[in-house]
Every structure is written in C-alpha cells, then in structure tokens.
Image 1 (tube, rainbow, N blue to C red):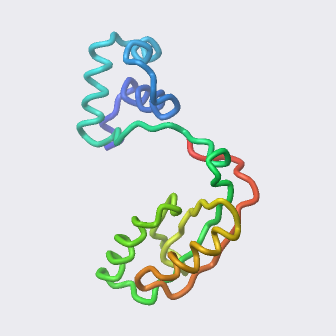
Image 2: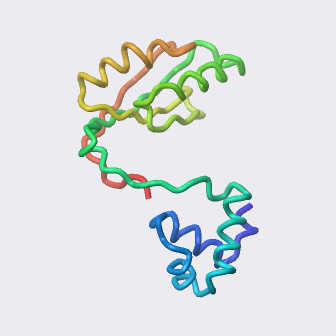
Length: 150
C-alpha cells in the first residue's frame, strides 16, 4: 500500500523510474542512505512486487514503429469468460503496446505501434478485428507524442 512507503522508499522508486540503471552506490548517495540499507529496501520493493522489473527506454521511431494509434474496442459479449478470452488473445499481438479495460461506452482502449498507416491497417484487419468477441473498433491516429512514458 502507498501508505507503507516512507520518504526513502519513494525516493528509490522515483529515482529508478527515471534511471533504472543507477548503481546501488549512486542511488544510496542520491537518497541519503548508505549502500546496504538502500540495497535492502530495493530488494524488499522487488520482493513485494512494487518494482516489477527494469528496462530501457526505446526510440520507437528509430526502431521503425513511428505510427501510433489508439483503438477503442467494443466487445459483443462482456461476460467474464468473454473478457478473459479477449485478455488472453490480446497478449499475443506484439503491436499492442498497452491494453486497458475501460468503464465507458466501449470496453478496451489499446495503444498500437506500427511502422506506418498501411501496417496499422493490416494489423487492424488481420489481428485486432479477429480477436475473440470484437464487435467494433474506432481508431484515433496520434499526430505527435507530447509526453510519453516517464
């Protein structure tokens, strides 16, 4: 729970969220603790699932994934079995960067990255529309990322 975090825990989390490759020594220096207690706190935050992993921030344009679309997905069936079938299937679509169940007039909001609009059209037609229980989709193409990630 957030209330279980003290100022050192929050400082560790904020520092690692912006620079995941900080050494324990540098992290300890930045938060004002010695190395051993800093490492123990990091381990506790990893063990309790607060820190779920470490990763690199990628330049998606240089990787050939410059096209971003947000897709509203409306399902034909929203009973639990249908939701679970959709949830399992969406995990197999590598172009889907994010998938959120939404409390709205639609059921899911996806963030989809592709090379270009033609590639997106293929992904929509061949993969997204073929997912279990998909009744309809609406696409919004991003023109510019003003703020992304952390």
